[in-house]
Length: 141
Image (cartoon, rainbow, N blue to C red; front, top):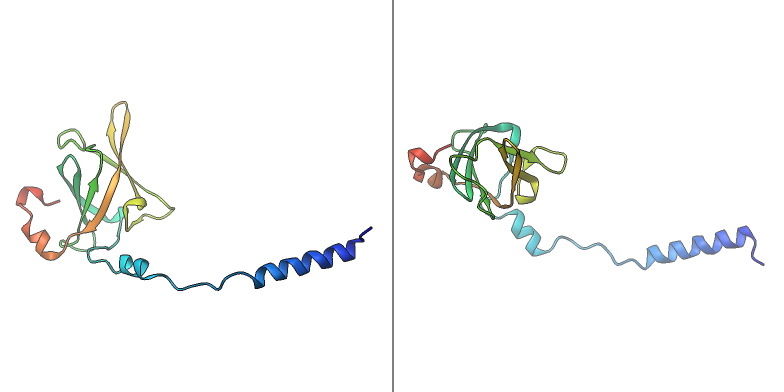
């Protein structure tokens, strides 16, 4: 019969052997580095939104507090926006922070008297200066 000291020693040896057999950590792959450095990928804070403009059933533009040229386009998948009836939008940041850098960081809903309709965020993208300048006056947030 095994005693407790022998069992504890065996368990400790197995634990150390398991740690030694673990593969070494690797650096992030080129795909991850490319995604982080992707042009147009930037972040904004939901609390910093200073204006919005619904462009069509799938697109809304947000102007942020960083500057008048800082405009972000949020594209939806499910055509949930109706330009006349989709205001106000309910924006709920996810992940415990109000910083939005990608589609998984923001839950968008269209408020209605009987509840809210969820929108499926497809993409969050910061417009460059040329894209902001190309916006028609009625499309600017």
